[in-house]
Amino acid sequence: MSRPQPLPPVRGLEPCSLTAWEGRVAAVVQLQGCNFHCPDCPVPHLVPQVFEGGTIPIESVLDAIHRRRRWLDAVVIAGGEPTLHGGLRELVRLVREIGLRVRLHTNGSQPEMLRTILETGEVASVSMSVRGPLDPTYAVAVGARVRLAAIYESVELLLR
Image 1 (cartoon, rainbow, N blue to C red):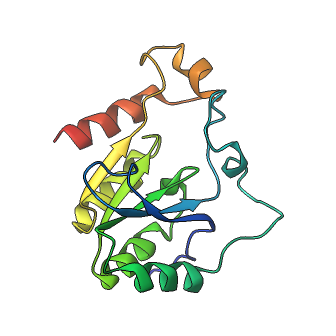
Image 2: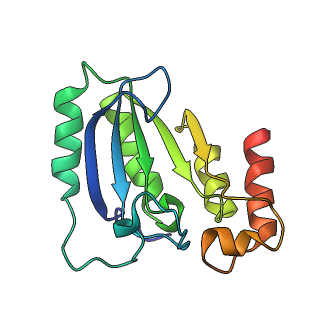
């Protein structure tokens, strides 16, 4: 019997975005922690795995989304890097219970978690940032050591 994973640490909530998912009105939930340190990261405050300023209680996030559900089409779960969190599946399930579609935004570094999320069928869309050519210079583009095979595997999963 597996132990339930804690829900991921939510660090940001954009209650209404017209650009996070083309053609949809979406809330954006931003999770803390990323395994990349991209020099051009648009959200560098989300990179550290632990943030001493605290997080937003998940109940508050879900309540804000629930109150806006009539005007929202979807929720985008982004980061940081969402696939670093074991409780991601539970977060997706909670959003789906509100009746909204879910898009996952990932860097593709965790194909095992990506596969698990895709197999649930609860994610309607996945967007993946590829920061440069998939060759040894990719580590420079993401500011960290990277398993290129993992990035390729994630791309192949999404193409299927």
